[in-house]
Image: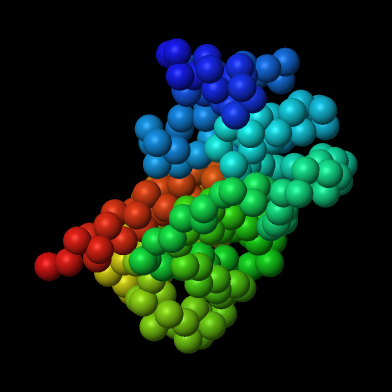
Length: 253
Protein backbone atom coordinates (compact mmCIF):
# COMPACT_ATOMS: atom_id res chain seq x y z
CA UNK A 1 0.00 0.00 0.00
CA UNK A 2 2.75 2.44 0.96
CA UNK A 3 4.58 1.79 -2.30
CA UNK A 4 1.42 2.60 -4.26
CA UNK A 5 0.89 5.82 -2.36
CA UNK A 6 4.49 6.85 -2.88
CA UNK A 7 4.23 6.06 -6.60
CA UNK A 8 1.13 8.24 -6.90
CA UNK A 9 2.85 10.99 -4.94
CA UNK A 10 5.94 11.03 -7.14
CA UNK A 11 3.88 10.83 -10.34
CA UNK A 12 5.12 7.44 -11.53
CA UNK A 13 1.63 5.98 -11.07
CA UNK A 14 -1.67 7.70 -11.81
CA UNK A 15 -4.61 7.56 -9.38
CA UNK A 16 -6.49 5.37 -11.88
CA UNK A 17 -3.59 2.93 -12.11
CA UNK A 18 -3.39 2.79 -8.33
CA UNK A 19 -7.13 2.14 -8.07
CA UNK A 20 -6.80 -0.66 -10.63
CA UNK A 21 -4.00 -2.21 -8.57
CA UNK A 22 -6.03 -2.01 -5.37
CA UNK A 23 -9.55 -2.85 -6.53
CA UNK A 24 -9.10 -4.45 -9.95
CA UNK A 25 -11.40 -1.84 -11.45
CA UNK A 26 -11.48 1.92 -11.98
CA UNK A 27 -14.53 4.09 -11.34
CA UNK A 28 -15.24 7.12 -13.51
CA UNK A 29 -18.21 9.17 -14.63
CA UNK A 30 -18.86 6.73 -17.50
CA UNK A 31 -18.89 3.68 -15.23
CA UNK A 32 -16.50 1.10 -13.82
CA UNK A 33 -13.81 -0.41 -16.03
CA UNK A 34 -12.67 -3.94 -15.11
CA UNK A 35 -8.91 -3.53 -15.48
CA UNK A 36 -8.14 -6.95 -13.97
CA UNK A 37 -10.30 -9.04 -16.28
CA UNK A 38 -7.40 -10.08 -18.51
CA UNK A 39 -5.52 -11.54 -15.53
CA UNK A 40 -8.63 -13.06 -13.99
CA UNK A 41 -10.40 -14.37 -17.09
CA UNK A 42 -7.84 -14.34 -19.90
CA UNK A 43 -9.99 -11.93 -21.93
CA UNK A 44 -9.96 -8.15 -21.52
CA UNK A 45 -13.12 -6.20 -20.82
CA UNK A 46 -14.57 -4.92 -24.07
CA UNK A 47 -16.20 -1.50 -24.13
CA UNK A 48 -19.62 -1.86 -25.75
CA UNK A 49 -20.08 1.48 -27.52
CA UNK A 50 -23.69 0.85 -28.47
CA UNK A 51 -26.00 2.88 -26.24
CA UNK A 52 -23.20 5.09 -24.89
CA UNK A 53 -22.44 8.69 -25.70
CA UNK A 54 -19.30 9.70 -27.57
CA UNK A 55 -17.86 11.20 -24.39
CA UNK A 56 -18.53 8.03 -22.39
CA UNK A 57 -16.84 5.81 -24.98
CA UNK A 58 -13.76 8.04 -25.16
CA UNK A 59 -13.53 8.23 -21.36
CA UNK A 60 -13.74 4.45 -20.94
CA UNK A 61 -11.20 3.91 -23.74
CA UNK A 62 -8.84 6.38 -22.08
CA UNK A 63 -9.22 4.54 -18.76
CA UNK A 64 -8.53 1.20 -20.44
CA UNK A 65 -5.41 2.59 -22.10
CA UNK A 66 -4.19 4.17 -18.88
CA UNK A 67 -4.60 1.01 -16.80
CA UNK A 68 -3.99 -1.83 -19.29
CA UNK A 69 -2.21 -0.14 -22.25
CA UNK A 70 -4.94 -1.28 -24.63
CA UNK A 71 -8.62 -0.79 -25.33
CA UNK A 72 -11.10 -2.97 -27.21
CA UNK A 73 -14.27 -1.16 -28.30
CA UNK A 74 -17.14 -2.98 -29.99
CA UNK A 75 -20.17 -1.79 -32.00
CA UNK A 76 -18.95 1.77 -32.34
CA UNK A 77 -20.68 4.31 -34.55
CA UNK A 78 -18.82 6.41 -37.10
CA UNK A 79 -19.09 9.42 -34.78
CA UNK A 80 -17.62 7.45 -31.87
CA UNK A 81 -14.82 6.10 -34.04
CA UNK A 82 -13.98 9.61 -35.26
CA UNK A 83 -13.65 10.72 -31.63
CA UNK A 84 -11.49 7.71 -30.78
CA UNK A 85 -9.25 8.49 -33.75
CA UNK A 86 -8.84 12.06 -32.51
CA UNK A 87 -7.98 10.75 -29.04
CA UNK A 88 -5.50 8.33 -30.56
CA UNK A 89 -3.76 11.08 -32.53
CA UNK A 90 -3.48 13.32 -29.47
CA UNK A 91 -2.08 10.59 -27.20
CA UNK A 92 0.30 8.75 -29.55
CA UNK A 93 -1.68 5.52 -29.33
CA UNK A 94 -2.29 3.25 -32.29
CA UNK A 95 -5.78 2.54 -33.55
CA UNK A 96 -6.94 -0.29 -35.75
CA UNK A 97 -10.50 -0.48 -37.02
CA UNK A 98 -12.23 -3.73 -38.02
CA UNK A 99 -15.74 -2.84 -39.10
CA UNK A 100 -17.43 -1.38 -36.03
CA UNK A 101 -14.77 -2.79 -33.68
CA UNK A 102 -11.73 -0.76 -32.65
CA UNK A 103 -8.42 -1.90 -31.12
CA UNK A 104 -6.24 0.76 -29.45
CA UNK A 105 -2.77 0.30 -27.93
CA UNK A 106 -0.23 2.52 -26.21
CA UNK A 107 3.46 2.36 -27.23
CA UNK A 108 4.11 0.39 -24.01
CA UNK A 109 1.71 -2.42 -24.86
CA UNK A 110 3.33 -5.80 -25.48
CA UNK A 111 1.24 -7.64 -28.05
CA UNK A 112 0.28 -11.14 -26.98
CA UNK A 113 1.21 -14.03 -29.26
CA UNK A 114 -0.35 -17.48 -29.41
CA UNK A 115 0.89 -20.51 -31.31
CA UNK A 116 -2.60 -21.28 -32.57
CA UNK A 117 -4.81 -20.47 -35.55
CA UNK A 118 -8.44 -19.40 -35.43
CA UNK A 119 -10.37 -19.90 -38.65
CA UNK A 120 -13.18 -17.38 -39.13
CA UNK A 121 -15.73 -18.28 -41.77
CA UNK A 122 -18.75 -16.40 -43.10
CA UNK A 123 -21.61 -17.70 -45.19
CA UNK A 124 -22.07 -14.37 -46.98
CA UNK A 125 -21.01 -10.74 -47.07
CA UNK A 126 -23.83 -9.73 -44.72
CA UNK A 127 -22.21 -11.82 -41.97
CA UNK A 128 -18.99 -9.80 -42.21
CA UNK A 129 -19.56 -7.25 -39.40
CA UNK A 130 -20.24 -9.97 -36.83
CA UNK A 131 -17.18 -11.90 -38.00
CA UNK A 132 -15.12 -8.68 -37.80
CA UNK A 133 -15.98 -8.39 -34.12
CA UNK A 134 -14.89 -11.98 -33.45
CA UNK A 135 -11.72 -11.46 -35.47
CA UNK A 136 -10.74 -8.37 -33.47
CA UNK A 137 -11.01 -10.29 -30.19
CA UNK A 138 -8.89 -13.18 -31.51
CA UNK A 139 -6.30 -10.83 -33.00
CA UNK A 140 -6.08 -8.96 -29.69
CA UNK A 141 -5.43 -12.30 -27.97
CA UNK A 142 -2.51 -12.94 -30.33
CA UNK A 143 -3.94 -15.79 -32.39
CA UNK A 144 -3.19 -16.24 -36.08
CA UNK A 145 -6.34 -15.55 -38.09
CA UNK A 146 -7.37 -17.39 -41.26
CA UNK A 147 -10.43 -15.62 -42.65
CA UNK A 148 -12.62 -17.33 -45.27
CA UNK A 149 -15.59 -15.34 -46.54
CA UNK A 150 -18.69 -16.00 -48.63
CA UNK A 151 -18.77 -19.81 -48.63
CA UNK A 152 -22.44 -20.39 -47.83
CA UNK A 153 -24.19 -23.67 -48.57
CA UNK A 154 -26.37 -22.24 -51.34
CA UNK A 155 -23.40 -23.16 -53.54
CA UNK A 156 -21.92 -26.10 -51.66
CA UNK A 157 -18.89 -26.39 -53.96
CA UNK A 158 -17.45 -23.17 -52.56
CA UNK A 159 -17.74 -24.64 -49.07
CA UNK A 160 -16.10 -27.92 -50.00
CA UNK A 161 -13.29 -26.11 -51.82
CA UNK A 162 -12.12 -24.70 -48.48
CA UNK A 163 -12.36 -27.84 -46.33
CA UNK A 164 -8.58 -28.33 -46.10
CA UNK A 165 -8.19 -24.79 -44.77
CA UNK A 166 -10.90 -25.43 -42.22
CA UNK A 167 -9.13 -28.58 -41.06
CA UNK A 168 -5.85 -26.74 -40.51
CA UNK A 169 -7.36 -24.35 -37.95
CA UNK A 170 -7.19 -25.10 -34.23
CA UNK A 171 -10.67 -23.67 -33.69
CA UNK A 172 -13.32 -22.40 -36.09
CA UNK A 173 -15.83 -19.59 -35.79
CA UNK A 174 -18.57 -19.90 -38.41
CA UNK A 175 -21.06 -17.06 -38.88
CA UNK A 176 -24.24 -17.55 -40.87
CA UNK A 177 -27.71 -16.06 -41.14
CA UNK A 178 -30.88 -17.31 -42.88
CA UNK A 179 -31.32 -20.94 -41.76
CA UNK A 180 -27.82 -21.12 -40.25
CA UNK A 181 -26.76 -24.26 -42.12
CA UNK A 182 -23.08 -23.50 -42.71
CA UNK A 183 -21.73 -24.22 -39.19
CA UNK A 184 -23.55 -27.55 -39.04
CA UNK A 185 -22.16 -28.59 -42.43
CA UNK A 186 -18.58 -27.57 -41.59
CA UNK A 187 -18.77 -29.24 -38.17
CA UNK A 188 -19.48 -32.53 -39.94
CA UNK A 189 -16.31 -32.22 -42.04
CA UNK A 190 -13.64 -31.34 -39.47
CA UNK A 191 -12.28 -32.56 -36.14
CA UNK A 192 -11.77 -28.96 -35.04
CA UNK A 193 -14.01 -27.32 -32.41
CA UNK A 194 -16.65 -25.23 -34.19
CA UNK A 195 -18.37 -22.20 -32.69
CA UNK A 196 -21.53 -21.26 -34.60
CA UNK A 197 -22.63 -17.63 -34.69
CA UNK A 198 -26.20 -17.01 -35.88
CA UNK A 199 -26.49 -13.68 -37.68
CA UNK A 200 -29.58 -11.48 -37.83
CA UNK A 201 -29.85 -11.59 -41.62
CA UNK A 202 -32.79 -12.92 -43.58
CA UNK A 203 -36.42 -11.93 -43.54
CA UNK A 204 -39.92 -13.33 -43.05
CA UNK A 205 -40.67 -16.16 -40.64
CA UNK A 206 -37.66 -16.88 -38.44
CA UNK A 207 -35.83 -13.77 -39.65
CA UNK A 208 -33.53 -11.64 -37.53
CA UNK A 209 -31.38 -14.66 -36.72
CA UNK A 210 -34.04 -16.72 -34.98
CA UNK A 211 -34.10 -19.48 -37.60
CA UNK A 212 -30.30 -19.52 -37.72
CA UNK A 213 -30.09 -19.86 -33.94
CA UNK A 214 -32.69 -22.64 -33.85
CA UNK A 215 -30.97 -24.49 -36.69
CA UNK A 216 -27.58 -24.39 -34.98
CA UNK A 217 -29.03 -25.46 -31.64
CA UNK A 218 -30.70 -28.42 -33.37
CA UNK A 219 -27.54 -29.42 -35.25
CA UNK A 220 -26.94 -33.15 -35.43
CA UNK A 221 -23.22 -32.45 -35.82
CA UNK A 222 -21.39 -31.38 -32.68
CA UNK A 223 -20.78 -27.64 -32.31
CA UNK A 224 -21.11 -24.85 -29.78
CA UNK A 225 -23.50 -21.96 -30.40
CA UNK A 226 -23.49 -18.38 -29.12
CA UNK A 227 -26.32 -15.86 -29.16
CA UNK A 228 -27.48 -13.98 -32.26
CA UNK A 229 -24.82 -11.57 -33.55
CA UNK A 230 -22.58 -12.37 -30.54
CA UNK A 231 -19.29 -11.97 -32.37
CA UNK A 232 -17.44 -10.86 -29.25
CA UNK A 233 -18.54 -13.93 -27.29
CA UNK A 234 -17.52 -16.26 -30.12
CA UNK A 235 -14.16 -14.52 -30.40
CA UNK A 236 -13.58 -14.73 -26.66
CA UNK A 237 -14.40 -18.45 -26.56
CA UNK A 238 -12.14 -19.10 -29.54
CA UNK A 239 -9.33 -17.06 -27.96
CA UNK A 240 -9.52 -19.12 -24.76
CA UNK A 241 -9.37 -22.34 -26.76
CA UNK A 242 -6.48 -21.00 -28.83
CA UNK A 243 -4.59 -20.08 -25.67
CA UNK A 244 -5.05 -23.62 -24.32
CA UNK A 245 -3.74 -25.08 -27.58
CA UNK A 246 -0.81 -22.68 -27.58
CA UNK A 247 0.10 -23.49 -23.97
CA UNK A 248 -0.01 -27.21 -24.75
CA UNK A 249 2.35 -26.72 -27.69
CA UNK A 250 4.70 -24.63 -25.58
CA UNK A 251 4.80 -27.30 -22.86
CA UNK A 252 5.72 -29.95 -25.45
CA UNK A 253 5.06 -33.69 -25.26
